[in-house]
Every structure is written in C-alpha cells, then in structure tokens.
Length: 77
Image (cartoon, rainbow, N blue to C red):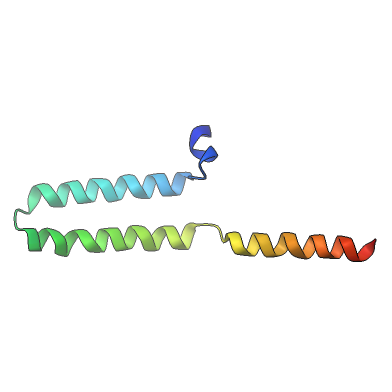
C-alpha cells in the first residue's frame, strides 16, 4: 500500500474501483445487446465517480488552512 500512497490513491478508491470493475465485467458477460449494456454500465460508473467525490479529501480547504496559518504567523512577527 505504500506505493499507492505515493500516488495519492487511498484504499477506499481501490476497493470501489474493484467493485465497479467486477460489476461492469458481469454486465458485459450477461447482456449481449449494446444498448442494454450501456444502460446498466453507465450508472455503475456514475456511482463510482459520485462515491469517490464524496469520500475524497478537499485539498482546497487544506490549502486555505495552510495560508491562514502562514498569514497568522507573519502577523505575530
């Protein structure tokens, strides 16, 4: 897992990606019609993206907090 941390990939992202991959593979094997495949695959990808948006860290908030702490430290000098 250290290699994944180096790239900023957390365990939740990896697990949800694996679940989405299995779901898409099952859908592609079960359904032969391309329209039906598309109808079932797109919500899987949308759920995967939505889940990762909700569980990812907000980097902008961290940057704002760092800037505020730096400006407060400069004001004390």
